[in-house]
Length: 308
Length: 312
Image (cartoon, rainbow over the protein chains, first blue to last red):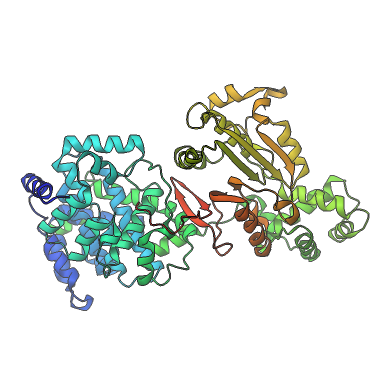
């Protein structure tokens, strides 16, 4: 992308009123994420969550979703944090923050499809990270969740044009990035990285947003890009994509990302990829449940009363 | 953790139909029958799947087609010089009997239509060869090869204009091959078949059944073939696509490796090998590359340009 196109894009993104800044609690949360686990103050997390009752209610709904393996109903934020573990709560909070931030805005794409893909990818990335002994599985979820931030940007900053992009991509069964390049002259990777920078997201996450479609361009010491690239492809081949079937074949083991990831996930070489792929089918209903939980605002959770 | 929940969900229980039989103590003679069947046919039933073999033997015993009243006598029949050949084949017929239907795997058909055939067509256009060769290995009663034949004929108006194709359909089971050749199917087998296919490629048969038209049959060569018969396997060359669904599951690792190696050799470079949706070649073969297609997977024989970086 040329500097002038990038400049124009940046200006356009800055002008969108629905994208003024990140949600208030996102920044302190990300700061918490960067601390060593033993330094994280539980009370502080509970405070942050309780700060916004909409977020608190969603947090509880998500904590009770089957994807998080809750067998018993979690009724308080405190209990959710203790039982799920602090990292998992941060995942949930970030999920909520992102949704809150995009709620009530006009979408060029179906927001549910966007969330199904983002949450699906986040979940698949974390699962994959665990199976291959990836050294930083906790970051995997966040990276997967945010990798397509640019779709949100394009959807909001170019509502009319983007509607056409998505329709054409669906018609031809081609990847979104390909259609974006053709119609807009840039992809969601580029617009997403601009917003990520505006939000002051961690550099490793901005790398993921910017390069998840072109892993070879990413810094070699950031394996998250390769991990998300693989997780993203798996999702898109297995019904957790952009809401349509992409008509292509993907050989993951021949992908440059595979080789890169092997250095950081020692068990990747011996992993049963066919079985992992079949496992993904069991993810679908769970991710859908999570999406429903994020979207459901009709039923307020009883715990919200306690928080007030 | 999500992982634990996932694993708990995945460890499904086996189908309940044969559960009762599985709980009954199994006559140790069946272990000897298992070894015999393994040695002669290369089809192995693990302890987990032994009940399937027991059920097949019991069906043979009940059929009256063999002079045996117990497992021990049945083993004798299987090993006697006079009966062993016919009875072994009869038992294999019982073991490999499988219920299936036309258009059983729509993701597979759609992947062919939207991804693999366009890929092949682009490649072949370069050398001007408009020919496609398929093999349905373990075709049972013909549902799979007929599905492929009708589907490919349907593409001859568009994607495969001017193409010819050759479908080899083989099965170990004589009776299945005969049924396949007849091409007569009832409602159950046709439950997934789109109406336009029914109208176009079927005629009416007795008892409200439908019969595959001769023009479809003409695209397929049916024959009996034992996948363990190395001398015949080497002649199945030049395949673009091989289908072998829920057949290898009965094979032990050694035979499976050997058979899959044959499939690999018989495929053209970049050719694809399809298994049943729950099967995997994990630890069976590491030359094939797992390829993800929309909603399904296949195994691809790497072409001469393998290793070339493809930007998805």
